[in-house]
Length: 273
Image 1 (cartoon, rainbow, N blue to C red):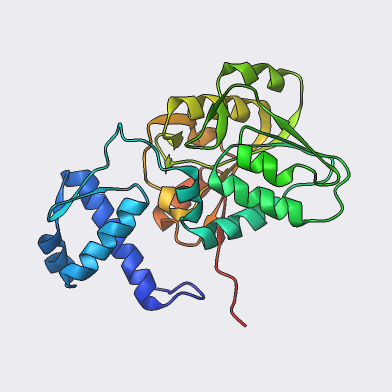
Image 2 (cartoon, one colour):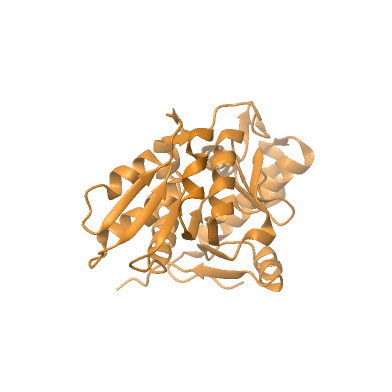
């Protein structure tokens, strides 16, 4: 196995073990710490650390002596928590996505934490004279507000504090009056069969509107969202034009997407030194 540039072998092996644990939880409904320690030939302390990391990502729920699938009806993680997960991967994705934006474009971005990473890199670029950004993300709008040459439009609706977003049908008419070149959309889950999915129907509804309005749809999803199915699908796989992700995305799914003509960009860590 090839170790990604900038990553220690132990980190790679740990991630592979965690992905396998998450798969076993989904497949069997429950796993035990001692069983996993035996299966992977590691200590129970190591397995408990794996379960804690996976619970932080929302991929399972820890129980006494093991873990089970996350509650379907539990509240979604707050935006501040999601923003702290995979910060390096999101920064890489944000940089690559911002590089695809041209002055004069009208783009739409959802309220995802990866979308915020894109907004930050857009703000850092100089030379904007006429860029229009449409978003339902309060944090994204705040990030870009006041930046010279950038006009920020927000959809109308109800504010959801969990996602720092605006949702609802009040913003639907906006997309009937403007042309959108590109939609940059994050997701809570991404599978071949279901496409991109989100934790709530309200978030999925506004994202469907964004996808339908754009000429090009670019998924901005780090590897932890791959092969996960969230509550509501908002974009089918065949509606996606390109995917920006980090280099830990599952190789088999990457190959399957490319076979369908979808451009997948794997972003490795920045070289050190």
